[in-house]
Length: 415
Image 1 (cartoon, rainbow, N blue to C red):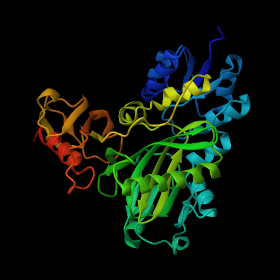
Image 2 (image 1 turned 45 degrees about the horizontal axis):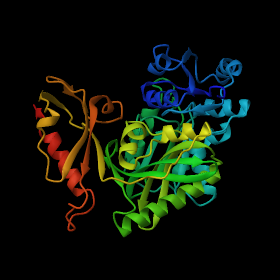
Image 3 (image 1 turned 30 degrees about the horizontal axis):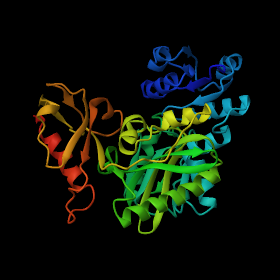
Image 4 (image 1 turned 90 degrees about the vertical axis):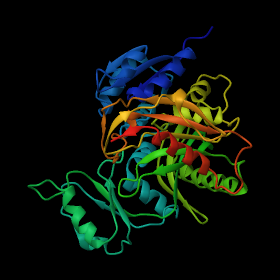
């Protein structure tokens, strides 16, 4: 029997637990690193090390003596760059630091794609500590989005409809005394269309889409995702063409960014004949998507299959199916909960099945307005499936699932 394979994981929060578990089930020894000594992934790993993951040299000093065979990734944010630096320094497969910078920096990502005609909009950098020069934004078309340059989880995002709203928003970026922005922001035109999320993988240098997910969003300005619906290329000719367009676009984008041997998550906007990449990063999606929803919808556990590929085992990223599935979060807001329904007592439309239920809401909880992922995701989720062959041909795809989700939320007692 050969030596046991070793993997390292940078960023060991709760959402890394699934990847750690899959690695250990496959006989891989996991060393996890996180700046929080109480991070759940540090306890679950074979070895947990508390280290500042923004400090690339400290992470490298920790890992060099342990010589991992490859890195595994959870839903990490800005410090994906540290993973890239480790891969470069130790000669490991996966994302490079240069590619990680392009994934995590919204302004550089835009500039790189714009050069090749893959992102056609005006985008401006508002740098921290520098005076805001409003005259530079003269070519901007409204509506526009003002957001932090680096990952934010919907924090600090402004949806701007006109010049007057921009005038009101810009001072909010500044420290009270200095009147200068506290952090880098980007200001870009808002592209119209329907928003989607993508779970995918770079198998070597080849892009493979595993699942396209249509987003259900709150209204502007937050546009927080409150649910996702799986899109099957087999559902209709329109769905097939959409999947093909998305795959073609992201094949071009990932080649331009130089991505190889990594899991992927992307957000994009689609309209009449176009696909507009919003963001893309070489890490799996969070919010119980890559670890639960995507495997349930497609039969592909992307974390498991990636680890198998790195260990020289048999693997496949090809979806066995694409079930008509929706994951929905509990987007009840500005209310006091009086009653929480029991899952076995839920009333659902004919042909809709409850596949999963995880609810942390309790009677007498006050639920605030949904503005960010932080304000929503801790409440839990439910997953519904539409049984095959029962769709009303007069209904648009997903209509029945959306109605069923509303029914579920309507069975909470609220005040």
